[in-house]
Every structure is written in structure tokens, then in C-alpha cells.
Image (cartoon, rainbow, N blue to C red; front, top):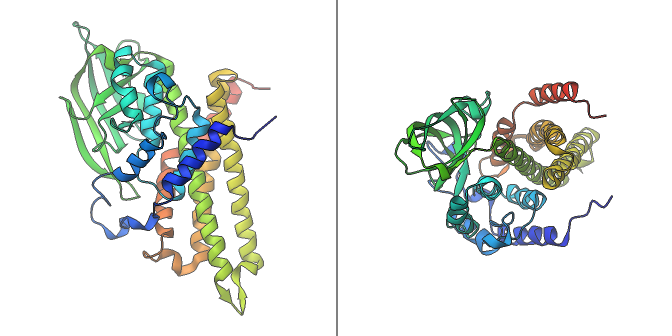
Amino acid sequence: MDFTFSEEQQAALEAARAAFARVAPDDVPSPALTTGAVADDFDRALWKRLADADLLSLLLDPEHGGAGLDPIALCLVLRESAKVLARVPLLESTAAARTLQAYGSPELKADMLARAGRGEQVLTVAAHGSTGHDPAELAVVARKDTDGTWVLDGIHTAVPWAYNADAVLLPAHTDDTGRAVLALVPRLHEGVVLAEQFSTTGERLAELRLESARLAPHHMIDTEEAWESLRLLLTTGTCALALGLGETVLEMTSTYTGRREQFGHPVATFQAVAVQAADRYIDLRAMEATLWQAAWRISSGAAGALLASADVAVAKIWASEGVRRVVQTAQHLHGGFGADTDYPLHRYHAWAKHLELSLGPAAAHEEALGDLLAAHPLG
């Protein structure tokens, strides 16, 4: 099998490297030094560069001004974005636009997709539900009124970029059959209330409360597989972010231990240091292999949703555990220097913790994977 990336995917990667080249991870205030959010808005200048480089429309079809590429290309770009801790809703907006393209009404496609690809319409996704533990689609109830409009009630927590996005794509469940649906909710809409929350990175999140919010039928996606498709793409993209972050942290650690001397020798030459760094390198290669397997699976649709769910679960296990081990080892090998707020490692550690929490505990994914294999043997 040929595991090399296509010319189009490589082109997206090169464009991403050029767009992120001017981003400095230590330009944003440390969450440890602020009492509120590290910034009121995401990086609009970078967002414009991404739009100009056609990186916001990667997954859109040419008829909507996009490149028609697959989630593998998106993961290549996300990997680069995490290396510099890029403060943009790239994953959320791209994933939402791809979902609208695949399952949305003609009115939504015409209204949203081209503008989202140009960066003029910013989308985000509510994917954590009301607690972060229960299935996200159970957080909101959607019912059809007699006039055909949909009425939504419920709460989604920890919604990223909600204060700066134009609309939020969120899962809900119907009050009659309990099936999962998706709703595209404008941020400035009657019945939508936002309450401020903060992530470990210092970014501003939101608790999104829906109080009898009424939506026209074309703002709803009443197709059950749409939420599963969106969830798998968000998860795989988060694994790509964890990989990019981990690679940069290991590179920082290698550089530091190669220069830091003790007893007249670089500490990188000490066996205890080299073994720990080697273990983290193995973690990253496992994260990379499982990421591309998952991204390929959801890109190709090979063998259906069952294998996609299994591959994404394996990628989540490695990403959740791996990114934590990489940053913890980095902090240990940097010594007290790793806690210096003038040095960017502490920000990478905060972002890694946020990604780990977003992915959820590896033990839960292992249990879910075991249940999946028990119910549907893949051999």
C-alpha cells in the first residue's frame, strides 16, 4: 500500500506552513498571568491569511469555492496549527461546513458554505453536551411545533469560540423518537443565552443555553448519521492537534537537553534522559500511525461506520495518553525552566491538558472499544 500523501495534500501542508510561519506561541499572555480570558477574540489576522491561502475551504466542493479535499488534508493543516498554538476555530468551522455540505438543506448550503470558505462566516460546534460525560446529543431537546418550526431547549457547555462565531452547530435529540439531529443556531438569536467559561488554556468558552429557541426547518439536519460523522471528524482533528503539539514539545525538549550541561556533558547524553525522550518519540509515532488510520477511514468511508468508530477510538486512546506523557516528560526534563512563564513550554502544557480533557480518558475509550469489538467482531 502507498501511504504517501497526494500532491494536493502536500500542497495544503506547504500552504499551512507558510500561513503559520509568523505565529509566535509566546505572543499571547499566559493563562497563569490573567484573571480572565487571554484574549477577547481569536487571531483574526491569521484567520484572514488562512482564508487567502484557501485553507478554510479545503473540504468544500469546487461549486462552493473549495478544493474538494478530504479529512487527511485537514489533519495535516491542523497538525501544523498546533505546533504554534494557533488561536483560530479552524477545526470547528471546517468540520461544521463539511457537515452542512454533506447533510444540510439547499438554503443552508447557499447561505453558508461559500462565505465560510472565505472566512466571512465563522462557525463553531458544541460537542461536549451539558456535563462533558453524557452523550452530547442528550443535552438539548428538539421538538417540531405545529407550524413546522423547531423548538430547542437545553444546555451545551464548554463551547469553543462561541462568543466570536456567527453560528453554532449543535446536536440535539427529538422529543418523540429520541433520534439525534443537528441544529445550526445563530449566536445572536432569540432564546440563545451565553455564559462565560474558561478553558485550561485561558481561552474563553461558553455555556450555551437554549430557552425555547425557535429555528426554521432549513436550519435543522434531521439525519441521524450527520452527528456521528461530525463527531468522528472533530475527534480525529483533535488527535491531529495533539500530535502537532506533542512533536513541537519533544523538539523543544531535545534542543534544551542538548544544550543544558551537567558534570561537563549535555544532559541529553545521560541514559535516563535519553530513554525518557525515546519513549516519548515512540508515543508520537503511535499517535501518528493511529491518526492517519482514522483519518483515512473517515475520508474513504471504507467498511462503514463500525470500523471508523473503532479506528477513531484507537487514535483517541493514543492521543489522550500520549500528549499527556509527552508534556509531563518535557516538564521533568526541563526542570524549573519549564515552569518559567517567559518560556512557552507552560502554554503547551496547558493546551495539552485541554486536548486531553477534550478527548476524554483513555480508559473510557478502551472500554468502549472493547464493547464495540464484543458486539461486532472485526476478525
